[in-house]
Image (tube, rainbow, N blue to C red; front, top):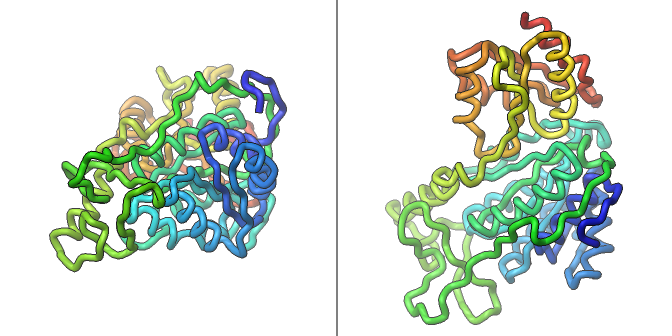
Length: 379
């Protein structure tokens, strides 16, 4: 797609185009509303840029194919929605343990089960963090506009390659099916990060050898001259299964620390009109659009409201939310679910200020007026 071109684009299309700009050259998926346009666009666009698209028989096979392609050195992605995201969980855990970089797009829809396939929801945020079994690192990012979708999917690939981990792009149906005019940025405007290869002269190289607890391993693509072992079992520095409690503890601790110790690099957020706010509305994804309008309307009536938007959902922006809670009297959490991140906010805030929740689970979007009225009730 031409750079610096103004285009009318759907969120799902922007997701695919941004992924291609990041270097994504392999997509495996299975159609599921409301993410299907991503797969449709991939089937058309990837062959045009020398990439590969494959429709697999189901969601489990899709992420398995993506893991294989990434192991061979291709930046790889799959896309799905709630039910398919559930099916991908075991292999997300596998990729986290084996440290294989990839991006999983989840365009959230109403549930549970088949639910309302074309209606908005934000009900998978806890599944993004806790969906797999065991302790594992997670990075999850949520966009609120079509332009941001393009830019943030590039960031997802950069983080996946930098930290050798799966990254979840947690879209919602609001953004996925929205159409907005955006400018396609030039390649000079964004950074592209590729995975590190080992030094050919390093005769002591082993795949999972690291110099300290929070280091990221150097795993070259299969078929490029290096041979090493990958297993879903706890493994030693060579990649072979181990029954050593000491090695197992070191492995899991390092996996967690490589994300925990780099939060400053990973976490991003937006603050809007919070400088003198008495009430902060915490939100994420497409919900932010109504929240921002409500804040402007509240300000026009003399009510000091502001918005805190989590862009990085996981790791949760604890320090930033805590600082907001020390400045305001109340935090209202607005999300399209029955209550998920509100519990994270409450955990972080403790007694610094009061917290309340407004949720929607009927398949409709928040209107600014609904947010406005809820803030008015707080007084």
